[in-house]
Amino acid sequence: MEDQRHTSKRKLLEAALRVIRERGYSATRVEDVCAAAGVTKGSFFHHFDSKEELALEAAAYWDERTSGLFRGAEFHERATARERLLAYVEMRKALLKGELPEFTCLVGTMVQEVYATEPAIREACARAIVGHAMTLEADVAEAMRDAGIHAGWSAASLALHTQAVIQGAFILAKAKGQAEAAAESINHLKQYLELLFPEATTKTKAKSRNRAA
Image 1 (cartoon, rainbow, N blue to C red):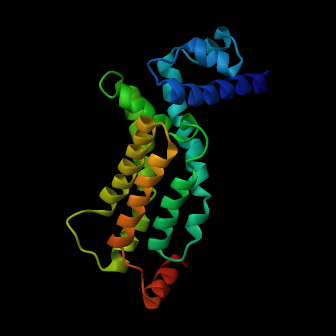
Image 2 (cartoon, rainbow, N blue to C red; image 1 turned 90 degrees about the vertical axis):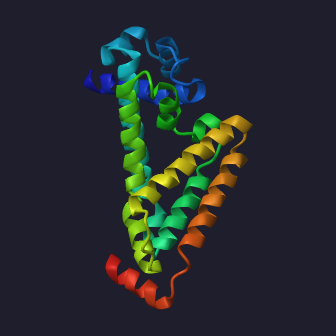
Image 3 (tube, one colour; image 1 turned 45 degrees about the vertical axis):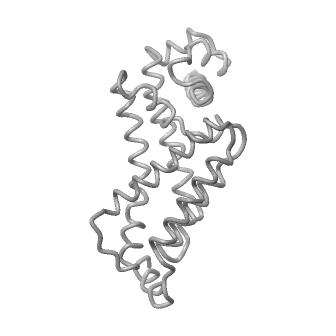
């Protein structure tokens, strides 16, 4: 019985990810999520007290799932911080597959609607977006050191900027109805990083490898 309860809750969370990205949070009804999950409303209210509670848990579920995807990604194996950042951006572009709801961001979608009306959901979305951005902070800081950059901006602020560009790319894709709009924006992000962090010399690459070892 415990396994069945766990399975039905997971189905509801997976359905929420699909339906909210398709329709938006406000237009999504409990009935829509239940239909997509293939469960009853009784099952829904066994797991969640409200649509808001579903949204909060869906944000955490999204964060956990995407964190696992990026944590195990190949770009971490690159020799220098610059190469890791550029490979990360390439991975984001490679994920632009399928229909718009299949590659756009759940938390980015929700926060655009609820930032002024649902503070708990806004905060959950912020934790996911900012938390993911901060996974890049160490590589940005290392790339700054490798390039000898001493600026009035921080590694954290650039890490956040990458997410601002990517979330904006999703908005452009929705506005134009095509993934190519997002891909072009992400290409510009990569070009910006390439200009900001010139390719390292052999000596600098060796230092980066020694730091990583």
